[in-house]
Length: 159
Image (cartoon, rainbow, N blue to C red):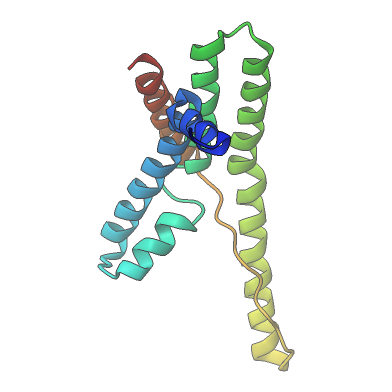
């Protein structure tokens, strides 16, 4: 007899909802790493691993891919009239809006602060520690992520 935890994990890894969300994130990150490697002409495996697991921003949006896959899979599993679909749809819209607007604006603001701090340091010797520049997403990156998530969820839900 298996322990209950193993049964729960088995059910989780068979769930089209989990599989859709996980593979959408994973495929988006792989594509992002490959695109970044081609753009930067980098063959450094460390850079690819950092991009694969930690990098935000870039093509396609793994945030948009993951939440779109989740909402789509919930819609297939429970129907679009179910309250769980409404919750996942609203959650998805919030995450996508954040990926497009808030994070992008914060990244632009961080770039401006870093330029200002660097200039103050150069001119007046004022100590400055740069802030992290968060990469947001463009409309194209979010759109491709959403399409990727949708089609992966459809595949896991139908197959």
